[in-house]
Image (cartoon, rainbow over all chains, first blue to last red; front, side):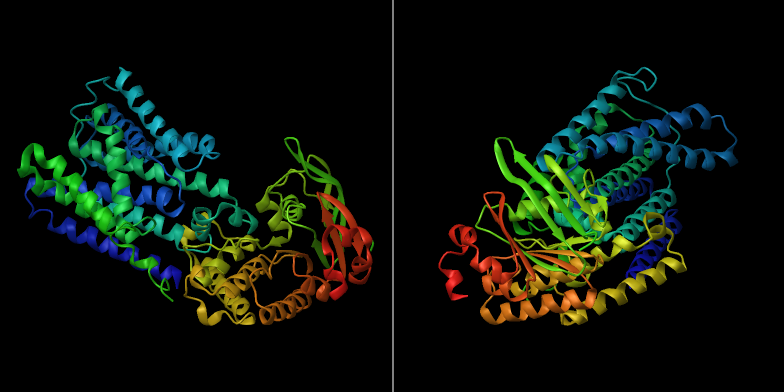
Length: 310
Length: 259
């Protein structure tokens, strides 16, 4: 039963990816870029949802992991990719994305292990500090362009790449959680002591969540770098992490479908608001405040309602 | 008894200046039903936390099935066959009844993260087995009708029973029950006594029961140990305990005469 669910979500995601890619020729450049942003935000939000939603660890460091992946991937393509033969470029891109993801996962491990003794607000502060450290490292490193960042990154992120990665992220997080093994993430979220008493190793699940979540954030960073073609350290500040956290909270912590919808909505709603000019930030913030007041459990937390009034 | 299933020897635990349990000895044999009683704050739940590895003793030794449990973390001890329920019910709140039990079954499941991702035939068969096993357990306790209900929305007595089912799903050799009769009415208490005896026989378990309700404790335990201010002040059969002057003074008081 559970694997049918995971399979269905994979098929759905692949279908969307294929349809969107086929249609991509019809879109103008602007809509294509917005759609790629949507895909990247889906990857970020769904992977953060594994950490914050399913496992219940409050991380504010997702932009940091994204920065690691973005910078590493961009550096690799700038060094090896630009002059390479056209046929080999997708391979180099794939390698760059994976390497970025793996380095980000290692960063996730580095943050995850010492943070395990911390809970709630304290963990949030540590991950926030980590994100800032990462940003400052890139800001001061000459190799990575210091304050200017990296420029002239090849624009290789297509809709197919974006939604392909989004589909894989949804599948991986979905399959991890929707299995007997995966109930452990929720158990750690609900009650660590009870989880331990049932033979679940909370440390392992938390580290796994951090490593897997950071990996996909890193890959999202790579996609982002090759979509925007420039990277600057300010793009990965604390506000970026908050944006992703908002998507997860708005979607309903631990609800993959809800988080995807929230990622799509929040990315899309930014665009028409541009007409408002400087008021945009205020209106966007107001929308979120009102939504949170009306639906504190998240917009789409329908999964948890069953049996609640039994 | 030859080699006891669980043996606590001279176990002491101090929290700063407070000695919560001092030089505590306890032996539990295979399939034995032992009670642990004492006034509030006597250290009963602390004893549970020591046995399950939540706390490490300051001094003394704990052996389970012939091997030490010291330095082992709670999940490792659970894997070795000690399961427990909690005084203040700790079910997994975001899960339904079925998943609460399913979570506990995975202790003995060989499939991990890689299998969950690749989902080969063996994994899927395993998941089917898990589902069958969980449903069998739920049926034994009459909870299969509520499989899709959220655990927290169950009536209180059902939540207590679900906690026992979840503990049994880890296939324990020793089951620790922390005040299972708390908040139950007399009829439910009688049901609970039947249930504990049934579980012990059906699954071949040893049971250590912490309970304030003397009818329940005296009614089902073969042997009872009494804690007061962290010290064991008596141990014996229910009849012996009821006559023990120290126990009467510290805990039973007048109640013993009515029992």
